Image (cartoon, rainbow, N blue to C red):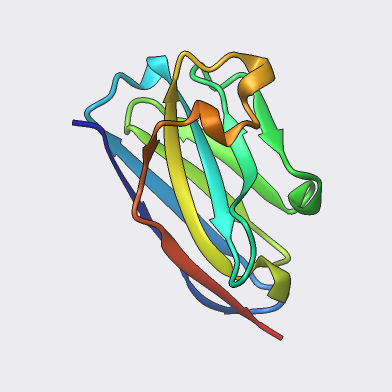
Length: 126
């Protein structure tokens, strides 16, 4: 069974940093792309950052470019999201998800990710 568990969320002041971690089990890491997604109150879920199965390619949505960095450690079966210069508009529930057989053109597509974690809450105060 594929299982993804997010951690690292919390309350932080604007301008601060958080590091989220996604621990994956039940998968062969080299077969799965991993994505981070978020859903803010009253808004649709959006893709924010994804990394390919081999870790050589990544996607970032424009609003987080230069502030967020995604990385994966296949040996530890984890994917992290380093979030710097946080803004109140980053407040959301953050989810990680895994997708098998994701090609580069699909890396930004939520539909390509079939297994999802439970989410971790990030609140950024102004």
